[in-house]
Each structure stands twice: as C-alpha cells, then as structure tokens.
Image (cartoon, rainbow, N blue to C red; front, side):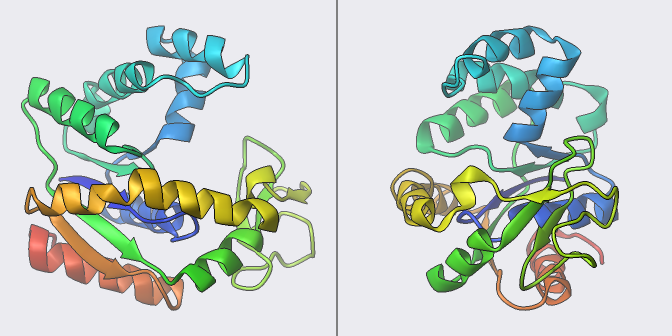
Length: 222
C-alpha cells in the first residue's frame, strides 16, 4: 500500500501516520525526517540539500524529488509507504506522479484529515517538542501534556516550542497552506484516490476513523 496524508498544519498527520506505520508495518516518510536522514547519511540528494539548509533557505523541489527517489527506490519501501507532508504543492505532486510512474507504482489512497481552523490554532500553539533531536517526542499543553511540565517523559530533556508554532505565525502558516497545499485536495480527488477522515476528537477515535476509511476504500484489514 502506498498512502499519502493531506491536512493543514496541526491536523495531526504526524501523530496518525506514526500509528498507522506501526500497525501496517510500512515506513513513515516525512520530508523533514528524510532531509535530516539524507544529510546524515551523506547521500547525493542529502549533500545537495545540505548546501541550501546551511544557508537557511528552502530546499528546491528537484532535490526533494531526488531525495524521495532514493528512498522510494530502496528495499524498505518495496511493500509500500506512508507519505506525510509531501507533496506540498501541485508542482511537487506532478513530480511525484512522474517518479512513481518511473518506479512502476501508484498511490493506493490519499487521506485528507479535516479539522476546523479554530482547533488547528489551538493544536499548533500548544504543541511542544523534546529538545533532544534524537528523541524529538511531541506533546501538547492541553491535549497530551508531559507528566512534568516542560520536561520530556521519554528522555528528561527540556521541551521547546517550534518558532513557527507561535501564535503570531499560525495564521500565516494556515494562509500558505490554503494557497499552496489545499489545491491538492481537488488534484487527488480528480484522480479518484482521495478520501476524507475527520481529524477532530480523541486520537484513538481519529485513528479508528482512518482505519475505517482505509478498510472501506483501500481494502486494508483492521
């Protein structure tokens, strides 16, 4: 199975993708994680990406596609994968189409997590991340707090707030999503692979809805 998740910032894609990855035993591939991994491993795409990351500028689409080509061509993705946060725009989606065609593969299902904007803002501003990059556990002040305020349950490191999770930047992030990424909903709907799952409620409830959506539309057995 080759599954792609769509959804606004704060929709819970990362959390649900990790759970689904564990259940289906498929690799969870996010652009951020892949970038860090490729740079660490010194792959050709990683070396090219590092030169842009060191300058603090966005990694060009062609390098991101090369990075995904490296990973999707590997044996770890032979049985499928779960994409999270990529593609982010129509140009990247079309490039992914070409890549998958080269690999003689296609997306099995695209899940769009729907969440009300007001809840998205609450989720984003309350999110806290472990400062230990090796751990990188994620918490939420309201919905999933750590046992000790400001301290990671897993490794004891201090929790931090991402700079782009601050309230003054949330609306700008959502505006960028509406302009650049939301058109992917119509794009994949036209390909008859898009299905919607409600991203509101308790995490377990959301996960069950995702499984039901996949089971109904993509022949995934729970």
